[in-house]
Image (cartoon, rainbow, N blue to C red; front, side, top):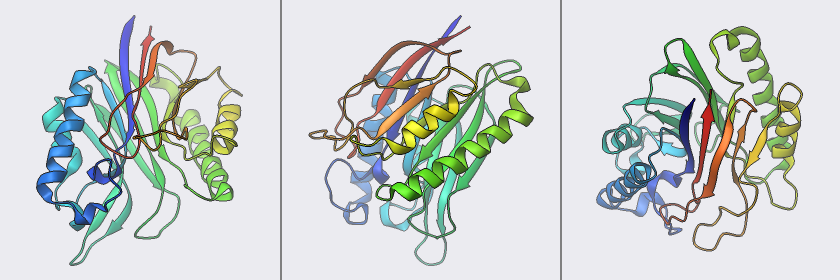
Length: 259
């Protein structure tokens, strides 16, 4: 039976904990903050990282691939980028969700919930080959921050995608999909989280983590926005909200075993 450590983290374009827009941060400050994120990944011996609000090539914070930079400095060699926002021209802005893994990512699909060139949410579905012929499916998501209606529509879109993937791709899976990311629910009404948990439990017993605690804003957390949903095949060994001041969110770390 093998143990795995998963970290989900909205890195807020690597601008750090301050509310200053990333376009007003120097490239040197952006790189230093990414290095701190890489050190956090190493410190916690993470195997799979799910990132939200991460840039592939954006003029507003250095015009370099943040995912490749993190991969290089945290020692996890395999990456998948799921762009949900793409704008070229003289001021390129390309960002979305990404996964960095210790093991090969053998399949990846990115889905944006709309077609705007900026401000769009979405998810990245990957299959990581954790052993020969054995794939661990993971959904890395980012839902709408202010509209309950949009969050529920997005969650329904995601679950339809996963049902189709389950019907056509599950032969090599070692477990039902893990879901993680920035759910953007208000704590008083966890609408999309509750809907997704209910949908997942139609086919498996899922655990919502963390069971308590808040992740946003990182300086004085008042809201629980970031979660992981684990299927019953994943035996939870440990979960914590990591005290870190590298983004306006705090990361969530989950350790689980998989036989």
